Image 1 (cartoon, rainbow, N blue to C red):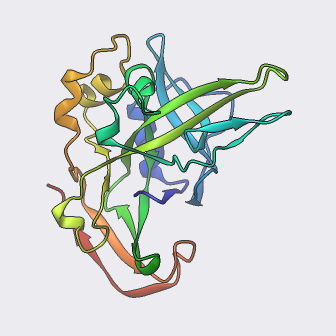
Image 2: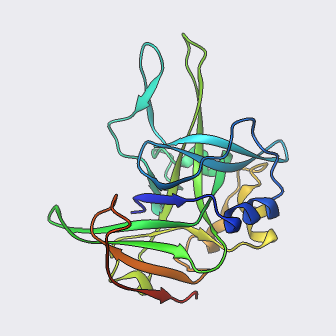
Length: 231
């Protein structure tokens, strides 16, 4: 489970966004060292052939209130890979109609056993930044007319190199090459078979990994950092 995002104002992130050929959204890109569940995050999606940056709530499922929206009682910061082709699951339609990428410097993972926190780690791109693959959903409030975008990060099976950090899943990291990104963001067709090969755990960039005390205490480090090498 990808539980937090690191989106600092970093040359690597800005450079990555430039290579994506994005038409910037009127809202400013969100920079925050610690982005947790249900907080706003900047996403990139392709709408009518144009890549746009939008700010979204990191919680795919929202409930409507009298005056707006709130996160659903069902946790949805992540969408499991094995639910993407299940029509009864929340990610089925967005997987076909609104795939996104989230430019980040890094992400955090926490390992629990029987509800007890065992350890937490932060991982950052050793060079530049990285792209997490996800889904988006659009919402319009019928009374107020408010428009909201929500999102989730897709999680894949556990990666052997991360087994001692998070044993249950791996966030979907996309290789930053034009063909891969274009195939992922292009939702003009609802066919997804050509994306099957991407739904395998992969580490496309070297990760600087650091154990920390708690998810929100990224500066309370434990031991020395180390490198997890890309595949």
